[in-house]
Length: 81
Length: 104
Length: 249
Image (cartoon, rainbow over all chains, first blue to last red):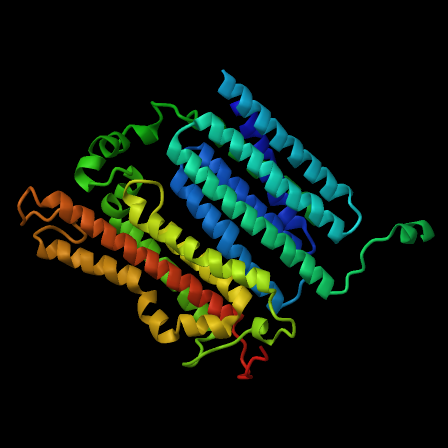
């Protein structure tokens, strides 16, 4: 059961990482990246590193998402081809 | 034993609501109707899972923390739904109507 | 052609990495090399020597104090880079696109942010001060303070936020993390040890645990304040707009 949970989380992690890189819409990429950070926080918690989980949840999902969003608002939303 | 059964029941209800919410999010036609299942699954699903966890843990401090989390979750989720819906209205996103799809 | 070359390169790299993974110790293996040299000493003596029940805090702030002061400097350098590109605002209040938005923020959201922000800051203070005992510490607490100010700024606008946290308040505190590390290090020398010695040899033995504890807490507070101010300053530098037009709202 625990192994299945780990496998699910790692698959989700890899999927969200690939999707975040591949997304053409940068807003979608930022949101997927924050999902990646949240799953990463869960993985840290499961690896018994609560300090890192807290950091990842606060910095990865909270602060960097907003900073990316501000950067997108200041530039263009679509990736240039 | 009874406690475990109650936990399983509440967690299953929560998981069921999460399933319904996700299905609704994927199947609903426009942003306004999508807000409905997504806020449902935040409030009802997560809160019943937390009630189940509170019953399972049984210690006073855990229950207090879970109640706090529940309060903050209810507040922030409702506010999020309101903000998204309001910005959609402000941007003049037309609500979905059944006739439009038939015409296409 | 280019694609084939990159595919070949990536698969070669992948095979190499998989070989490395195969030779790595199993997760949680008690005989893996990382657990044989310094970890047992940390786990056995950390609570006694660093006086913090959370071993991670003890390692980060006490045993690896040099590393952490370096990290703090890196964060400060990130802020310096952002400011070198975007520039620091002139004194006074600044504004952003949030202030120029013709639609005022929803009263529901405003009320909720006003209601929740104190709780978030309270939680961050708990995270900083309780970092000795429970998971958390300066970095985490600072990031949470930064997040609460970010929420406030995105809803109420930069005009209001820069009134609450003016420049003269932010600038001295941005470097506080490294400054406090430096002061604690010098205090270690004054107390008779080396740089960044928390357990001063010159004082009585029964006082030492409390000295170590308080020095750790002071360093945590410094890191928290410094990290939060760095994040807030980066956000302000990124959101701010050049023309000095008074906001509509």
